[in-house]
Amino acid sequence: MTDDPKPEPPVPPEPGDCCHSGCAYCVDDLYQEALDKYRADLAAWQARNPE
Image 1: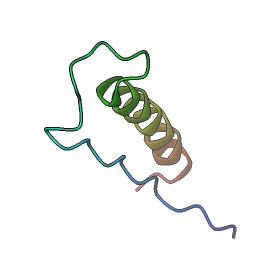
Image 2: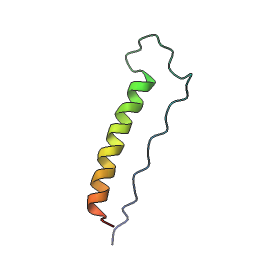
Image 3: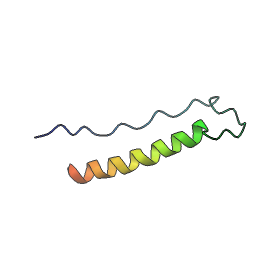
């Protein structure tokens, strides 16, 4: 049996992390991308590890 740990959710940014300056790589956008990846990874993990 191989090690297949459950994906961990990304840590959300703190309320003051976004500077609201229109950055190309806003922490809120990066978090949303990480959250989307986490959800996809979690769905794949759940398919591999049915309860």
